[in-house]
Image (tube, rainbow, N blue to C red; front, side, top):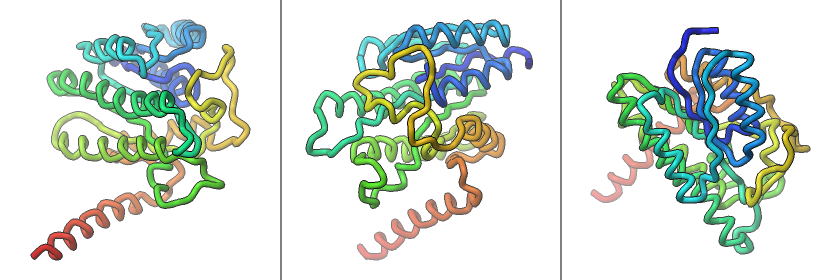
Length: 267
């Protein structure tokens, strides 16, 4: 195991990408702060990380859609030991927009947008002051699927919109922080072998044992490998399974062309 590297705060740490990322970071020598709604899951993971890596582990049981819970986690993210922030918590709220329950819609926006923004804002100033830090915000390949109809893709207007926000927010923040020592990434996995699709988000999946949804998907370790390799390479947008990163460059070029054409149209 590597020597201690600081503390990583991981949201959505009770299963899937969050739990696996916490394991990977602890193996690299990071102490961790594990955040999720399921206390038993967090306790199980914390115990395992302490035993297997000897690192320090804190748990914060919190629902990031609840203002008081979010405030507690924001306070911890602002701590002077936080060197890595993984904003992984997210809920899907899938369903027809016209039939989406208003309370679930609000929960999706609070967890997927407000919490990501608030936690990043809490962590970044201290990282800048200390001259080092990493922020990874987990979005989705569905952020690039706005024009595609549902079936076989899910009905996802709100979820897709929130993940589009995460992509734009992270890319713009990375541009603002260019030239600083901070590493900023938006991770955009496709269908991943987790339990994400086993709940719409009102309540977490019950039980202490992780389970994979029936749709299958990319193994979690491959998603992590892609994210960590992209961090090492300095790539802001990471799409696991994308073999040609120039497609991301093409996205930026298309955006520039649209803006340039629009300016010409007003002259």
